[in-house]
Image (cartoon, rainbow, N blue to C red; front, side):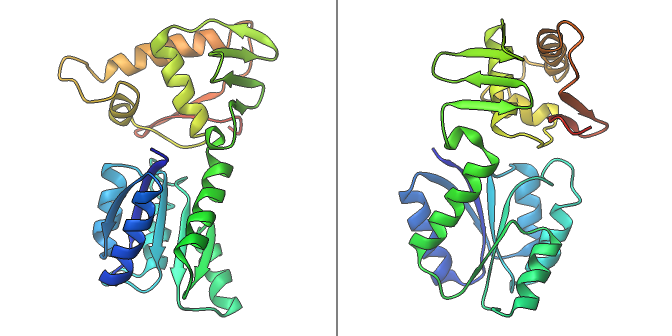
Length: 230
């Protein structure tokens, strides 16, 4: 699967067409035509990318974009706005609100898929190659080797999966519950949220060995993120 895509489009015919094309490209597609519901869906199951129509029922696409950018767990999810507005001032307004790209209707599904893949390659390095890297930390997903500043780091299986998940989503904040969902595979009632804290601590000890700078950021009341800008 290439990733989770949230499609926010209130034109049923266009929504069905785009859903069909993206599912054919191996995307997991969730759809809604309502702005309020879009925010709830994004918060409940953070997508890898959002296709957001400017003119939708209820909240406008701009307001949905603005609100998402103020929610720590999903603030870094890339957003491509879809709109019939082609004026430069409208494009600038959309981008300034927080959109990563802007596609004017009418467009071909093939063009939109290419735009989505381009954005995902930029924000998720795993889609562009076999080497994931943030700052001086890198992971070769073919050989399963992890290095920091050129020195090999030994990780346990769970820490390795956590590290890969963070490297595939740099800068993005994940709650402990979300990490259990996406790294452990499902919410097992026998696994407690504090289990995540234990493995995060082990991961930090491994990658920070020798007094290296911290890369895993704790976001109070939100979760954890991997980046080198804090």
